[in-house]
Every structure is written in C-alpha cells, then in structure tokens.
Length: 89
Image (cartoon, rainbow, N blue to C red; front, side, top):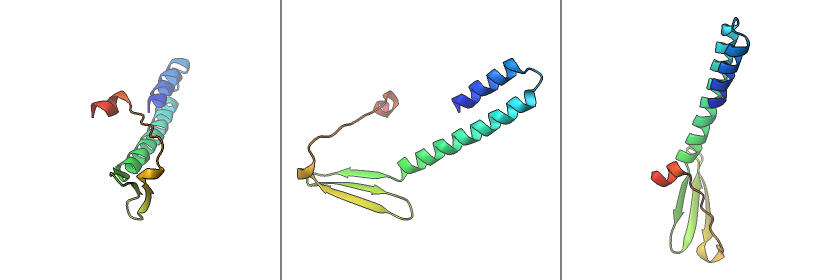
C-alpha cells in the first residue's frame, strides 16, 4: 500500500497533467496491496499453534484443516521472531 502511495506521488510530480493515470495506478496498487494483506491476515487468523508439555501441534486451514504434530523430545531449538507491534499485543 505504501508503494502505491509513493507511485502516485511520483507520477503526480513527473506528469502533472496526467492525474487520471496516477489515480488509476494508485487504485490498482492499493487493491493489490489490500488483497495481499487480507490473504496474509486470513492465513495467520486460521493457523493455530499449540505447545504442550508432550508435543507441538500445528493446525492450518479454515475449511480443509491440516494438522501436524511433533513430540517435544524431537525438538532441539526454538527460534522466535517478534516485531515491536507483536510484542505489544
């Protein structure tokens, strides 16, 4: 979405007479950005990770559910990456 905003500003500055092309490109890039965001959000919303004292369970999907399980004895390391916003929530 931010890329679309930069594209509109650049097109408006470079081609001041062609505001319709700038608005069209902004709308297209904004639509693609929103679609990408919604797809990622939905994937994260429908994924469930459960860690118990015996196993790790990873469930994905909304209608067709895929489940993976792993015994805790087979896990050697865990790497957690969180953004600042993720830590705040």
